[in-house]
Every structure is written in structure tokens, then in C-alpha cells.
Amino acid sequence: MKANSTTSVSVRGLALSYGAVQVLKALDLDIADGEFLVLLGPSGCGKSTLLNCIAGLLEPSHGQVFIKGKNVTWEEPKDRGIGMVFQSYALYPQMTVERNLSFGLRVSGLAKDEIEKRVKRVGDMLQLGDLLQRKPSALSGGQRQRVAIGRALVREVDVFLFDEPLSNLDAKLRAELRVEIKRLHQRLANTMIYVTHDQIEAMTLADRIAVMKGGTIQQLDAPQTIYNKPKNLYVAGFIGSPSMNFLKGKIEGAGAKAVFHLGGQKIPLKDYVPDAPLKAGAAVLGVRPEHIQLDMAATKANSDAYKAVVDLVEPMGSDSLVWLKIDDTLFSARVESNQHFDPGQKVDVRFRINLASVFDEATGDRL
Image (cartoon, rainbow, N blue to C red; front, side, top):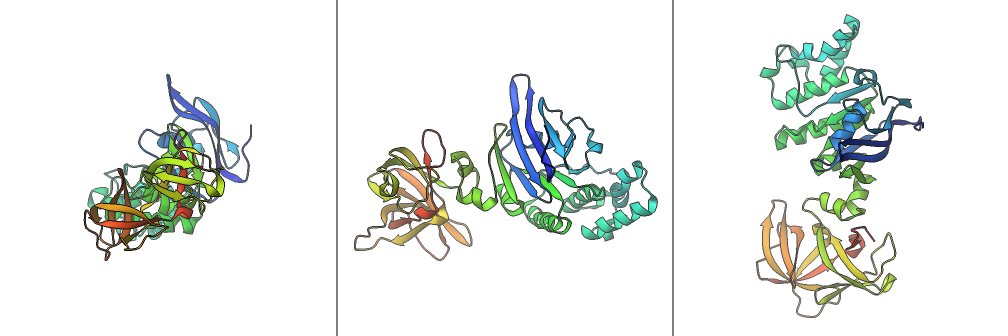
């Protein structure tokens, strides 16, 4: 079996088991040259295991790994043409930044002038020039992680693998290094595979995101496609902060005449663009908080508005999250911070159905 030679990294039928426990389940994945792919999912979903199989740190039970068209399934990590950055910095404490950056090159026997050239280039790129003679104990967490990234970059390989590299940093440093990694990718145009459980990192960094669960890829798409058209309830619930509202009800009618029953209220689905024909039955209406409009309850009836009661309000700085009830169904709406609502207040609610998702309640799949 051969991988497409135009791709940078391919896995074919990749599976890994520990006894009866299947960690990866016959995965197929193609990553294009220069692509930034993010493997996203909760702990235990198999994302780091997949990365380690690509790196050669774990041997798969079945399947093959190709890098630049070459079958590397049984190659040692050092022979795969990869650079890897881990969650822990793993720097040599007794060595300076310069020695940490150059260590792997010196061990491989690279010429001294070439080593100096690469260290200087990477040091300038990652703004480490003034830190080259410091030891790791004299660096901040962000600086140490930049050194760890630099140690991978000096190898000048085609594929870089990142295993949750920002997890040990505080929120401000994570945001700063996220921007640096994105700029780095734009400058280098190398293939990068990045593992994270943080959906914000995934959405901001990725060309494509592979959302994983239980050793399988649930959806592989561009960030905006995953956000706007999640394939199932799992993906819809994992992506988005605040998370998508899931309103349980039922569909009556079919096609353009389909109506979603939410408690005692009927929501027409004529503006919804389905992936599969809508049919009568139990369903879940998924609506993101920013796709819900709230107004003070009008004195006259509004045919396109639904009556709800404010439960509580969460101020979030630039905006507020308003929790509402329709009958016994609780959901949230995102509003501008200058809009004021009080608990117990009656409001009109409008759902932007053209931006909503409808899921089959039994299978969880998007309709």
C-alpha cells in the first residue's frame, strides 16, 4: 500500500491496542505539504498516541505511516525527518540556551560553522539572541518553551510535531506563544501537526482540525466548517465557548414545511439548510449563544419571536451571557454588555435558524 506522494504525512489503517483496549481504531489521514493540522480532543481520545506513532515513539499494532511518500513505519524517530516539541521543555539544565539548541546537531557531527549559522538563524527568529548564554533556570516559562521549539527548528526538517506545548504556561503566555507559533508557520511553511485539548488553540492555529473521540476522528475540516456545521452532537458540544445550546424537541412535517416543537412553541425550519432530508421524529436543535437575539417583550404579538424568561445573567466583560427558559428548557444567549436584563424578566427570543444545526436525537448525527 502506498501513500499519495503529494502529501507530507499519511497514515493508513493505523491502529494501536493495549491488550483488549483499542486506543486507535484503523485511522486514515492525509496531511498536505505546509499544512497546519491540529489533533483536538479530551484526555484519552488518542491524539497524543497518534502523534507518537507518527513520530516513531510508539509502534502501531496495525497500519502504516508515510512521510514525504516514504514508508517510515519501522524507522527510528531520528530517521523520519521530524522535529518534535513536547509539553515539558526537557532542556538540559547545565547547558546554556546556545548549547541546548546545538546539542543534537553536535551529536550528529554537523560542521561547526553550519551549527553556528543555524543557531543564530533560529535564535533571531524566536527572539532568543540576548538569551543564548543563559541557562534554563534563568529563563521564564515562555522563554524556555521558545528554546524547546528552537531545538526542533535547528534540525531543518520537513515536519514538526507539537504535543501540547503550551499546557504548562499561564493564559497570557499561552496567548502570546500561540501568535508566535502561527507567525512561525507562516514564515517557514513547513508541515506542522499540533496536539491540544484547547479548542481556542485549535481554532486560531489550524488550517484543518481533526476532532477525536475514542481513537477515531469524528470530523476533519477547516475550523469555520467545524464551528458552523458540526457533523454530530459530540463535535458541536466540544467546539465553541460558551458551548452550543442543545434544545430537545421533535420535528413535525418534512422538507421546507418542517417545524421544530420546543415545549409549547413551534419553530419553523424553512431557513435551515440540512445535510440530510428533515423528517418527523425526536431531534435536537443546536444554536450557538451568539445566534440568538433577545428583545424586551413587545406589547404586540411577534410571529417570529418566542417567549422566554430570564433565569440569570453572567457579565463577561465585552459581552454578557443571558440564561433563559422556555418552559423547562434552559439555554443561553450572548448579548452586548450594554444590554441589561434582569432575572424573571420576560423577553422575546429569535433564533437564527440559517446558522443553527439540527441533530437526530437517536444517532447524534447532523441532519
